[in-house]
Amino acid sequence: MPKKVLDIGQCDMDHASIGQFIEARFDATVVRAHGAQDALAQLRDGRFDLVLINRKLDRDQSDGIDIVRTIKADTDLESIPVMLVTNFDDHQELAVSAGAEPGFGKSGLADGDTEKRLERFLGE
Image 1 (cartoon, rainbow, N blue to C red):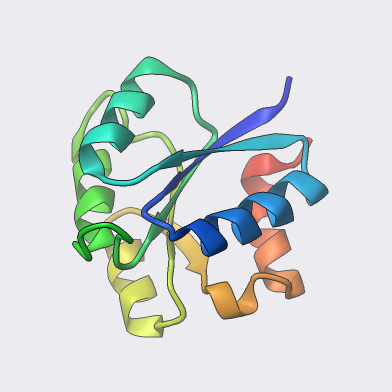
Image 2: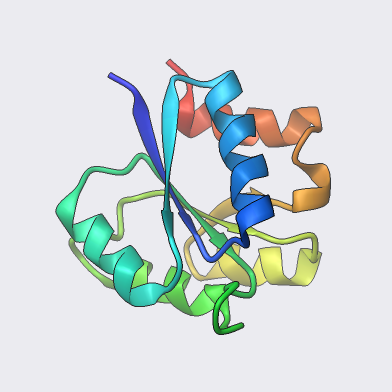
């Protein structure tokens, strides 16, 4: 059964890049959400193996870390692994302290570390 990833707040180009990267390397599908409301609705309706959240959401520029906190504070959702997508180390540290897994930046999408981080949740 394919793994399922929820990708939140990416622009069209970045969503396509992340989706292609993941789907080419793993037996996984990437589903898109644009903000907290549609993301939380999808998380409550389906099974997801990983959630990726942009540091700044594409539509309203709100902080992705707020969605990390919301997911991790919800007893029904807290066990779902979440990663923040950002190139900024200080934002990665903030996300990890809020309960996220160490994420990756878009500039490092094709490096081996990113694939290893994803392998933990999307591998066989």
